[in-house]
Length: 210
Figure 1 (cartoon, rainbow, N blue to C red):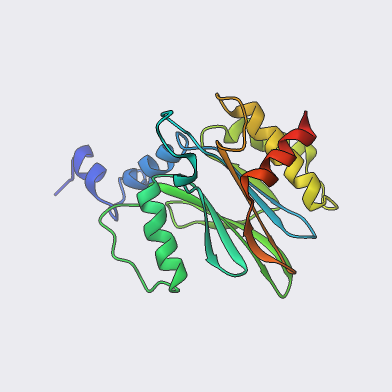
Figure 2: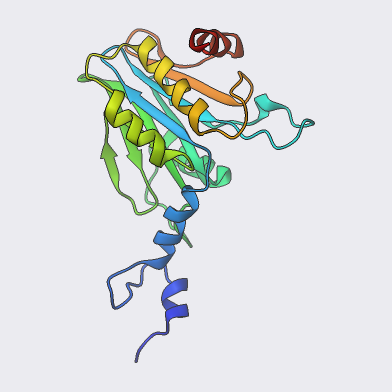
């Protein structure tokens, strides 16, 4: 008995004759429409920066969470479906046991942390692939941002340089003018653990760029 294309479309664990999982592919494509998120690993720590899309003047910008704490020394930036990210992060916070899913999560995560080897940066996508990076971008502006990261990232980069580069790249790919209320920035360092930057600190970085 052969399955139709639509039946392969609906199955989250049924491979097509070409060896494809369409639901996973659709979830990965959905992330390309999400907010741009950047992660840069330096010797001092890891920097995360994310675009916040404020769709209405009546919306409180601080209510949009794109960077979240998992533990004192681990933080996470997301691009994709916010509700899915909360589910994944809740699992991470309790060192999730195996989750039974009806579909792939439509979200990708940049997970930054510090261990005995120093600062670490990982990317997790809907296929379950978990990859370590020195620097990476996800979301709508990821193609251009990743090209710039390949050209400008270097192993000796400081956290301040990572702050400047991250916001410079967000400024290039965002449709709206970069400001302290439409982006979110955080860092993870051995000394201070995970910290989300205040609007005032983000504004100071923006002023350094101008």
